Image 1: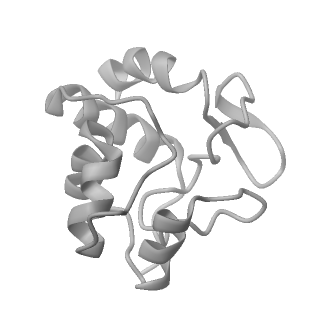
Image 2: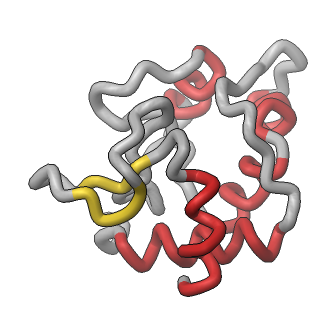
Length: 121
């Protein structure tokens, strides 16, 4: 998680981690991307109040839940990840940032997980 905290500084340009009480636990309160608090184990494209792209919403409609391996693949190339998961060449992600370093992505996952509640079973 410590290494992930440093990498998360890149993520906080667009994302925040804000708990249900409104306390920002990481980031600067940015709202360009969805709130990442509680993202581990959450169904993709379902954070209330955020307008997701069609492809992410379609992925969520399948019941897909975030886990470490998929998160690492997603941040490496969001559109390619969605194309592969949805088996649809026209699938596109709204996130333009890419984090190709799998170790750094896993560190960010560890950081987000450390600040989030345990996923529902």
